[in-house]
Image 1 (cartoon, rainbow, N blue to C red):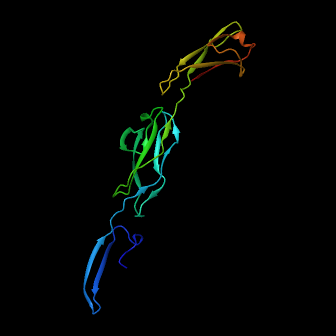
Image 2: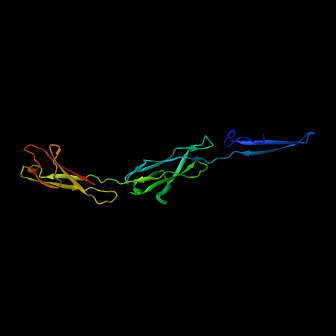
Image 3: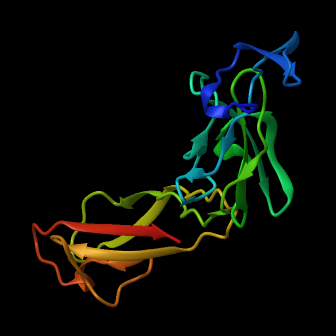
Length: 212
């Protein structure tokens, strides 16, 4: 045959073909040619970013899920470029791990993955966009003063350390008071007289503050 299927060849092999013409009365002199089978660039038909969504404190990772390389003995590898709505994100150094420091709420992260076998790079393949969502604020550190009280004592729920919000939102606090673990409805302010909570001597009063 004048053709050899690609599946019969391997990278690095040297193939030689010899041809001889025959006019029906006898063959002529032989002619030969050689060719070295070179490297074939790999491809990636599926790119996955994990997690599938996150906040501005979430690191993201990009990988190839559908690798293809005609040279089966090659070792798969890849580099990545991150973007959001067409704008570069991060240092653009080829890393497939995107540190949370480079993300912010509202981004639609896309990973463009470039496959490589060490000898050649294939065409880049882009992931589906991944949304960077809101990150809730941290919990505040609070304390109730005074530490011991009677029914006539006014209790105050103090913020010792304020909540922080990585999205730089304005933080609002919600307060709840409990007597022996049960929420007392109708009391949501930072100050309250212990007797108004309906407790009695020996009850444990706690305050809860959540940030949003």
